Image: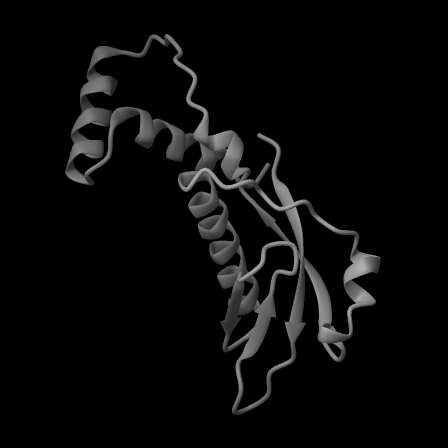
Length: 136
């Protein structure tokens, strides 16, 4: 699955202020974090949530600008630039039916595990596959 990469503008934090994050390609998408690592993780969540909301509402996804164009914007003077990699939410929205074969006892265990967590078998298998491939 192809991931999406978004430039982010990070407003440096200090001992009393969190790191602020703006995602210029997605209007209204902001985040923050007490540490730089938290700021990046929270930005990823904010981006994915915004993309899901836009898709749910049938709104078009914004067209990205180049990093050079963003850097010239005086609104971001003093910000540090970085990139966040997210899941490809639009691609994840299109489900494809597949037929697989697994040992019956494994299917029963998957179903019990998924049901106990309020998930469908498909959702569990997708999550397990994403988890397994995350380090690849």
